Image 1 (tube, rainbow, N blue to C red):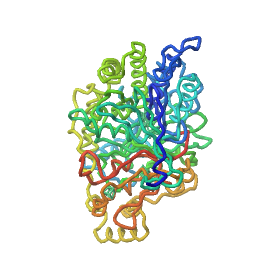
Image 2: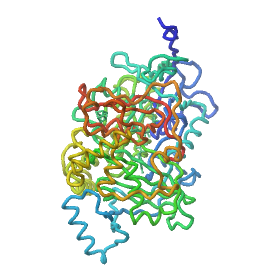
Image 3: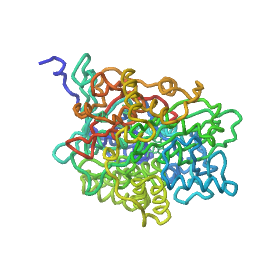
Image 4: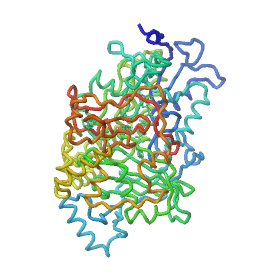
Length: 619
Ligand SMILES: Cc1cc2nc3c(=O)[nH]c(=O)nc-3n(C[C@H](O)[C@H](O)[C@H](O)COP(=O)(O)OP(=O)(O)OC[C@H]3O[C@@H](n4cnc5c(N)ncnc54)[C@H](O)[C@@H]3O)c2cc1C
Ligand code: SF4
Ligand code: SF4
């Protein structure tokens, strides 16, 4: 037997182990760490594994540092303020109170977007009556922000800066250890019980086989495993595979959010606290946001959702067209890119809620279905469920009750069901079903659900994303002839590049006027806006499960949608994956046109635990 394979896997015993340090775990650890010690520093509760000490609480985070998450954040901050009553004046870098909110319907200044007949009629009517409407620079400023969308008493944050601020406080209590750069590869499951986690093996080749310096990932045993690895987390998905989803629940609604952090020009009229939300352009399905931080810094970006039927759905190029919309470009012209990022959002909300607890584990945050797609809010909800679990854990530890499914249901789930997160999640449950029938029905459905507190909605339950994706030729029919298509395909294949750039050019999208500051090539953004790093000695975390399906796949949406240009046309019919360009956005997980034969709720790509990614503590 190979010597390397005989290296023993280390074991560590803890009381509580957490997977991921996002807002959900931050809420959990903030609440928990405050109650583990008495005022005199003695343990308020005793550890089961280290008698005489407070409970041993460990948190493993995949990213290379605390605060390398991605989120543009405007939040009502209800749960955050409950944890930190002085949060608005705490001096968190890049934080600002919301001062102004606008919702803008962006018309298409070029006529290149794909608009339904209903939308074209609406556009014509708006243009005809523009003198009487709050209309400027091809945009209609909606005169009224519905109450469910308002964040007027809330805050703008940088999730990176906020997480660093929280992380420092939590660790300074001395009761919690957070280990960044340490991905969890799997939950350890015995029968129906989760008994801890296994960390990722190091010193392996691309396929995970032991290689130079092989170090098997440690097994961390704990009475409670807190699963908070977000919407694309491998541990949450492993538990879904093992325990299934509750009846009728699924995770079919997704979006990839791509954002830039920029320095606005010196003479910008935009005030800190300004919040703009947009819809209508560059395609009707794409939503945009602009949040202004202090010191002329802004977060801006778009969401490209799973119901957008374009198989060439590149978030990067669409983000550039969005920035260039006349209403926005007057603010962005002269701006400079500081950093950028991309991350998948789980948009199924309560539809996507898994089993929240089981023996030995509990799930919190976005991976547990918290994100509210009606109010456009996820951070506060994730944080709230973390605090609810912490209160439940303290109650159980004090009562010396084990972390069984029954006890966790009676403490954590009970608190969650009684909270605003649950009530608002129910109101939002069907709010986006209308988008299954198009952007106009989707917007009307959202308004209907929002104004009736979820009593009425339009549309139908979402279908699996892979079922919606047409072929490239069908999507661009009428704009690009079959002959041109064949030529573009052949040219892109020879250059080993994705198709979307050439297809969008051919379909009439204007060229991007690169300025080397804000409008830069995708490749330059990877170099300028955060820098991608991938430590050596780890396996590829993106895996094409059934190469035969890739061989005959016509859409190859994984290549077009890849946020880091990490998936490219391969030498064979199977795409190639370059770990050193991957920003860990997770978009490839659901941007695949083929169902996984073993599970049609999944697709032909596995997104496993991995290290590295885009480094920025501003996103
Ligand atoms: C572009 C964008 C804009 C957004 N805008 C807003 C907004 O304006 N307002 C708002 O409220 N919300 C917004 N959201 C949503 C919000 O960011 C999420 O709802 C929130 O971050 C969820 O928190 P979480 O802790 O549940 O999960 P996450 O933030 O996803 O955190 C999960 C953590 O787990 C880590 N992890 C994953 N796998 C592993 C593993 N195997 N081992 C160890 N660690 C692992 C990840 O690296 C990550 O740090 C936005 C999201 C995006 C992408
Ligand atoms: S991963 Fe999916 S979309 Fe990409 S080539 Fe394979 S089957 Fe097609
Ligand atoms: S390969 Fe990496 S960068 Fe590309 S879509 Fe997948 S997770 Fe995102």
